[in-house]
Amino acid sequence: MKIITWNVNGIRAALGKNLKSWLFEQSPDVFCLQEIKATPQQLTDEQRDFPGYRAIWNPAQRPGYSGVATFSKQEPIEVRLGLDEERFDVEGRVICTRHDDFLLYNIYFPNGQRGYDRVEYKLDFYARLLEICDSLHAAGENIILTGDFNTAHQPIDLARPDENETTSGFLPEERAWVQKYLEHGFVDVYRHMYPERVQYTWWTYRMAARQRNIGWRIDYFLVSESLAGRVRDVIIHDGVTGSDHCPVELVIL
Image (cartoon, rainbow, N blue to C red; front, top):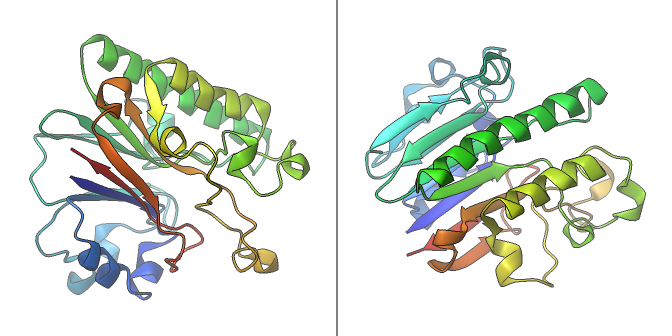
């Protein structure tokens, strides 16, 4: 099974940059988009049409902001939107789909760079999601978390860690939450498979950062420990343009 995640930084812009042609060439079983910045009603019929896929949308209430969408070749057994907490759910950040033997969470974690109140909101979001995951693990569920986590976990995960110790996205309290997920039954399967590989998934549009590969790895697949042995590869498609993020692919049995 192939699952692809991609923060497209605006689905309408990405569709104008060959989003569909690349995805159909890859033919994933499921693909998860974040930061779609649009409702389905704002797209044309052609833009909304992903032949062969069932589309699930969770846009933000605020126009042109946030939002996630999941596309699956097989009809999901169950669909859940949000975290059952209004202050998070109005921003359209979570879609959970149930597949044969796992739950797939497509997540756009909050960005904390607009002030410390947003950092606190982001940390509360991490806490609420982990509370849900702990309950699901206790009930014997297998979980895959994917999307834009908006946090680089370790110094190897960004080009300039020393310069960013006080920058949201690499704050100690943000990194500690990613670590807590790993202590609560999840595996960062890319880093597990490639402990010393340096690749990034996001680059600022400023200062020719992508051309100079001054980036951050902030897009992840965290899978339940019970699923980790079934993972065959995690591929960062860092040569694929169309957004300030690149797609990441999980291959799992």
